[in-house]
Amino acid sequence: MKEKTKTMLKYLFGLGMLLLGLIFEGLGIGSPSFETFGSVGMWLIYIGLVSLLLATVRLVLKPKKRIIDERMEFVAAKAMRTTFVLFIMAAFAIMIIDGIQPIQVPMHLFMSYLVCFLLVAYFASYKLLLRRY
Amino acid sequence: MALSKNRLRKYREKAKMTQEALAEKARVTRQTIISIEGGKYVPSLELALRFSSIFRCKVEDLFAI
Image: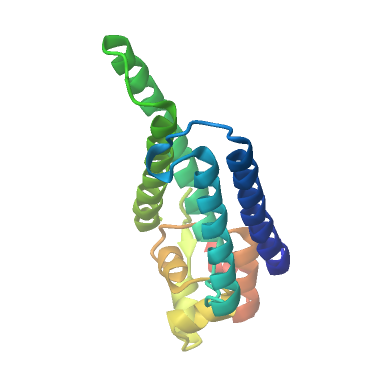
């Protein structure tokens, strides 16, 4: 994908989130107390603003282009597979734990933890596999 | 799969090239060159062909299974 298209997609995502957040906030859709953000709309506005800020910073600073070679792509594919296996194992463990004692964590928090777990699992497996290959 | 013949280091040293210089010419990272020379990573056909064009030799002179 071309750099220009990537930047445009980033801006579109940011603007989309901002617009969605404003609609949610204006119509009062969603939970009125969504953790530290006040409401779902406010949270979407926050995501939109951060996305726009990041896209602008990247556009202005233009970070040095890093070489991504075939070994890195190979390791990334392996890390993706490892993360998938870890995800299945985690899902299995969660099912058992939930069976023993029902998990009381709210859905959005649970999903946040899950996304964080996946990111950490991918990063760790990528770094470990990079040493092996 | 491991390679039974890997003469990349030999050819590189013969050409008096550093790993850094070869990496730059082959458009890969130095770590990739280290991995290939150490036999940890098997290069793709495209990369092997790139090496053969850099050293002006046949691919089978560099690698064999």
